[in-house]
Amino acid sequence: VADLLIVGTGLMGTSVALAVRDERDVVLRDATPDRVSAAVARGAGRAWDGRERCSHVLLATPPAVLAAELLRLQRDGVGRTYGHLCSVQAGVQAEVEAVGADAASLCGSHPLAGSERSGPEAASAELFAGRPWVLCPSALTGGPALAAAGDLAAACGAEVVRLTAEQHDETVALVSHLPQVAASAVAARLLMHPAASGLAGPGLRDTTRVAASDPALWTDVLALNAAQVGPLVQLLADDLAELARALRVLAGAGARPSAAARGVVTDLLARGRSGRSLVPVKRGEHDRDFVRLAVRVPDRPGQLAGLLVSAAQAGINVEDVRVEHLPGRPTGVIELLVQRGGRDPLARALQGDGWDVVPTTL
Ligand SMILES: NC(=O)c1ccc[n+]([C@@H]2O[C@H](COP(=O)([O-])OP(=O)(O)OC[C@H]3O[C@@H](n4cnc5c(N)ncnc54)[C@H](O)[C@@H]3O)[C@@H](O)[C@H]2O)c1
Image 1 (tube, rainbow, N blue to C red):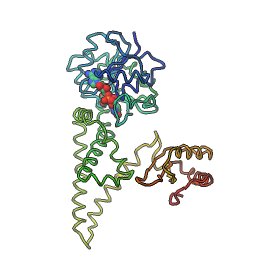
Image 2 (image 1 turned 135 degrees about the horizontal axis):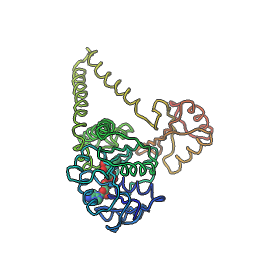
Image 3 (image 1 turned 90 degrees about the vertical axis):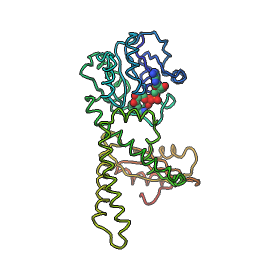
Image 4 (image 1 turned 90 degrees about the horizontal axis):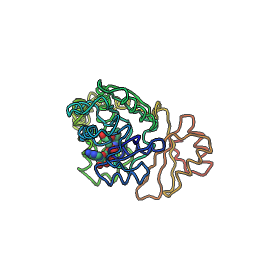
């Protein structure tokens, strides 16, 4: 009997396997055999022979195939308990019950960690470290399934949170599914004028990062959570329609700027700024707690490492790093985010070590 069978050795499944492989005997299965080979090659576990019994089975497949896959595994008596990681919970719970699978041995959960990349190559043992991992037991979930799901999340280094499926779906609609829609809608506009993207800066990269996600997987997610996401998309569309009306007024206003129209624009930007201040940078900390220090560096290997060594020698903790390559230029800019009191000492220390600190950030 293996400790853990992972079905679906993509980004998520392989990351879980890599995180627990030292403590657990992990076996792996995927509908695409190459994906199992890739996960095995990364040391995630061994290939499942299709017969071995397992204490716990984690379904890390796309949500659309989950209920059918669960039913098949349960009929074969493969696992004692089952879990899944779907980004949407209530719809999956309903489907599991509709196909007649045993809901008592299943506990749904959702790690709030991930990437716009997919597949075992993108997996990482560290993906879940310090991240929230929401357990969503249904009314039918039994104690052993809940305990097994919680143990696995904790073994991956995540912080375990418990919500109902409905609370979960409402929350992720706002913090994950709406941002995906907004990023995709902005990125889709770039197709109007592909050459313009050559001038893109970090703002465009940051706002469109998740637009690189897999459309098929996200279609499943949005369809499963349509009842929660739809009204939020409508509210966003209302905000944008009002903004578009105000901008039309401003475009035609000429020398008579309309205070009301400007007010609409400022209101959206100000509400956006307030909302952004709620977004954690690290858990419990916010962007406003950090200040930036920009350093110009030659665009060649080793610069970032050298900079971090200088910062460490100055005894200053770097909270985050952003690297800006300037296309066609031999230099780039590295931005270091540090605690407010740390910037001036860091700037002095870096200048002392010969780094080209950008003066406007001093
Ligand atoms: N990617 C994220 O950021 C993220 C975050 C949280 C939760 N999730 C959830 O995790 C799950 C997996 O997502 P992922 O990002 O790892 O996707 P992925 O595409 O990297 O991996 C999914 C794997 O499932 C396999 N698969 C498909 N149908 C199968 C079947 N019938 N039997 C066995 N294997 C099958 C695919 O071949 C693929 O290897 C999804 O339910 C998703 O909602 C993803």
